[in-house]
Image 1 (cartoon, each protein chain N blue to C red):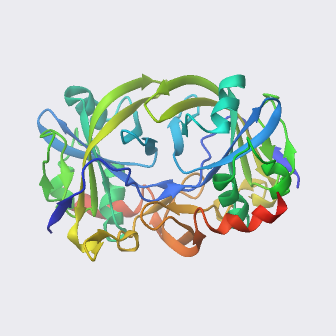
Image 2: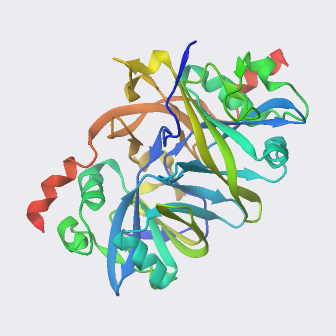
Length: 192
Length: 192
């Protein structure tokens, strides 16, 4: 299979679609972020890359707390809007009609309509160039009751948004199931 | 909408599915990783969380280089196998019939069958507890010619694997398109 070289790029597929929240000058603000993922298991941590110029960057730096809210597919327009508009100019919470609440940390705004909300306390900040990589310890998880089955989280009810980056820049639903992790690969054990 | 509390968790959805490669004691090895994403734009960087006990952790520490290979859906069994088996005990490259090649860095093994391969040089390592968060500067991108349309990368041809974590632990294809990023949110501008 022939390959071509493209130099240094940011071509990772797929990516999550998150709404990162922070209080900026005391007011809740949210931005859409595809560059964020779990960074540690024990204790649970998340990393998010935020461009230095963003209003959210200012808020995270002020409070050293932030939230990661997972939007479901019915919030894809609001989510995209939070990636286009700047909280320095408009009130995104009002435009999106987000119901905001606070949890354990008190300063990390959470979106009620998002099925999952993580409250995070910054424990490391790496200055990488265009972006700061904030590593947050996850202090609390809020789950909408509508995502539970028999009292337990049911991942099939979350309906999160998949982001495919450059050049398509397209949001997608999660598609057909391909198999169970830690199980379908067992078939290859015979080839060891 | 009522919420329940689950304490600190690693509940991010969806996640990417990556094959992280490293030479360990001079031999190529790969592991499946869902905890990795872009960390910086200029210059391009990626972060990946690797459990301290993993064979791949040893290899990244030895060379301070690694690769991120994006498997397509037809490699989902091989990918899962690379998340189950340990390179300390078996030759995963042989079991998966991966064709391995090297690029600019010389020590980051790349999988020819994966449509995208990123060569990364470690520039930061954060010790977070159970995992090290390796931040790698992306030095080169290799793209399979089969993913090009008119000489340019066509994201629709990559067919990457979406990972939904606990409790479903299920691999998925990318589903239906929901809309263009930086565009569909424009509708909410009228509500500002």
